[in-house]
Image 1 (cartoon, rainbow, N blue to C red):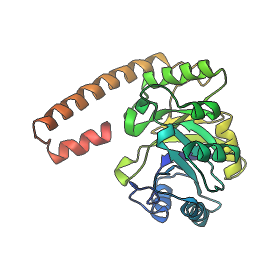
Image 2: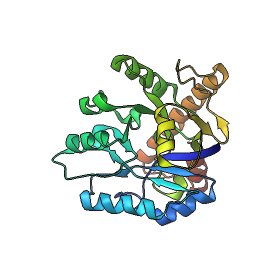
Image 3: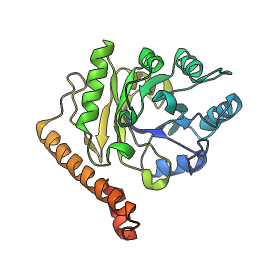
Image 4: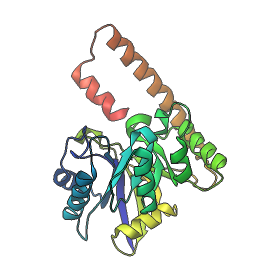
Length: 264
């Protein structure tokens, strides 16, 4: 059995705000010991032809030691679709979402912190997982217990299991966080990886340390929960100060901004 590590929620230049090509992404992640990448290109500026080219390019830059797994993000539906294999013409975003789900893509709620009221009905009808930690929106050092509560509440309201997922919402090199899926499989194979994640046979690992989140109960280890609460408090304070400083036209020194970006 192989132990493999992967990251999720990654954008290339196929997205309007991605900065690295798929070729550059493959090199970047391989250098950091990543075995597979769950892509999530923004669909807003894509069409069926571009998506087909994207899927083909993911295959081109994959091999027996590294996989780029195609995926789509539909922001309007707060949804990620991992493991996209094909796509046809769509009439609207709900139509596209249903196509992707029927074709076997794993459907996940993306960055719950951005959901203003509730998960859109079409997403709720097909969702299988929740991005319980998005390092771009929830902070880079600790999971946000409020998002864990969201996951548990959605799971209860829908009355079915929802696998907890993590994502780095990667657009550029400075977005990298060592927040990964770790799982075992017979070989590095997209079907095996997707099956393992879908069944919750993975761990969420940060900086080589498993995040002590019980996938069944949703409980966080007490000590980790305390450190998470402390980090969340600092996160809120730092961003409050950042916004206040920006409103008066001031800017923090570049070195301080880089340091804060690594931590928050």
